[in-house]
Length: 251
Image 1 (cartoon, helix red, strand yellow):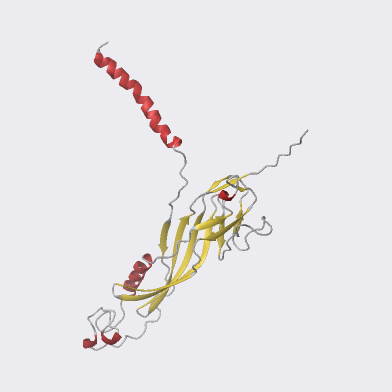
Image 2 (image 1 turned 180 degrees about the horizontal axis):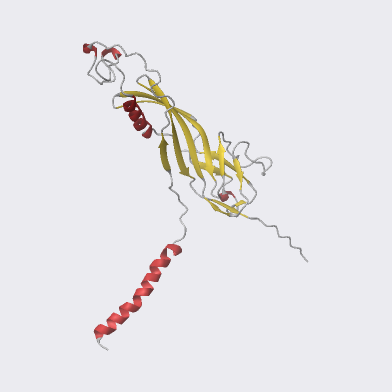
């Protein structure tokens, strides 16, 4: 057999082995416990749309304005957004509000649960044990005044509720939270007074929290409301296992 043919046979024999190593590598590396699954969606719901059109604002003297479309003129005088001082079209205002809300930095309500599996020697929470749920940020209302495309917009965000997806197909919706004491005082089997859950099946679960916000806005004589939904995962999964008691007798 020629040297060229022997080299070709050797290379062909090594190809399956290389493919097997590549295929098994992800399993040998282990499971990554870190999560970065935060997502954000914005849903617009206008409650009132141009039902009552206010009378046009009086047009300030031109020498008081810094220019048409300016937010403020001299001595704090409001300048018209369009010639004559009339309101901007409703669609233009709503578009500006959407963009302002999209840039609004709402609290990151990362879900937190207790007890932590790291607090015991088994590294898990037992089946049937009450799990307390709460949010990493306690903010329930937020107010911001912004200017977008020359339009002054007042935004007030109110947290409606938080829905916890428990990873086993069940969801818990809460409007208030209580942080679990650490260490726990009193009955260790006492559940959360307002936001908790009990797992009935062993497993490794990823908890996600979906926070629903209602945002009320006013701009250029109009007002309305929007809903904003933030979804973010817990920093680590919760491991749920089963504890068994074994009684042994000595001789």
